[in-house]
Length: 102
Image 1 (cartoon, rainbow, N blue to C red):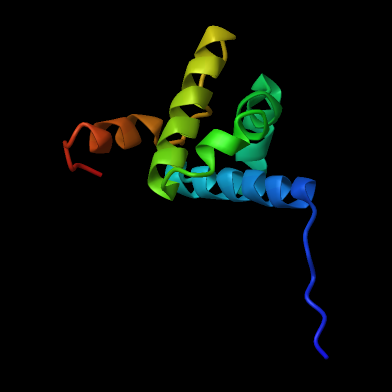
Image 2: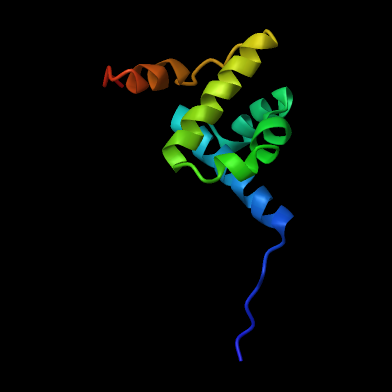
């Protein structure tokens, strides 16, 4: 008989957080390590992604990614941190406005 592996709640939440980091990194064109470092620096993983998991995990991947990047941008700005050179947050914002330029 085949045994099914059941994940704990924390394993599920951590997997979700990891997928948020990876998807956000891909969207802005940086490595997942750089995105993780940026998110950790402002507390985004603990104070937003994990804290509000019950609400945000029900949204579409596109909405989650857009919200996380907007939150990251706002939190970095409020702490006087600018996005690393080479990330395309500006282009992402233009696409959201319907500009269509890449």
